[in-house]
Length: 228
Image (cartoon, rainbow, N blue to C red; front, side, top):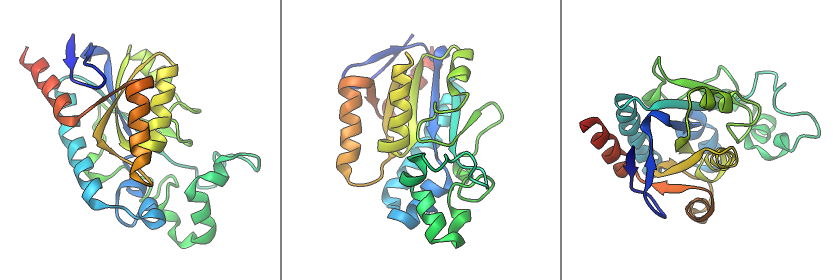
């Protein structure tokens, strides 16, 4: 068993039953010129350190034998999986407003097969990684994620990616409800909107749903595990 420094208290975890879930690290969400940048603006002073944290974490995770799972948010080109006329999804996700108002930017959004949909070059999945496609904020909604986790006998999940207060939070909350242990790596995530949205997510997980840790503490745990 490995001990991970976290809030509100350290967590004892079995690395053989632990996975990283990398949430939506796609061009649309993490790169200048992508959907999030066009719709709300991307602060590279925040996103670049998050990308760097991922590079360090995933390298160490693979070396320690910890499974890496990517979530990839996107819709089919004909939008048939986006929800019908009664779906709130088509009214709340920014992609649909942008498709209507700025059809010339379609390739920068999250349409399957486009640049925006692709996982960023710095974090391309490796052959032993899993990629789970999703069409809603939560990685569990309408996907094989739970089956994949159970099939691998995973119980502890380290979450990274974007956005802290939307897709990361949605997936991590569902993980808690499905009896997984969600741990958020706070400096390997980026949020949308004011900073209080990030703070609210971290507060909720520290107090109600899971645990909060940092990149250096995860790396320390993985290095100590390799040393033994």
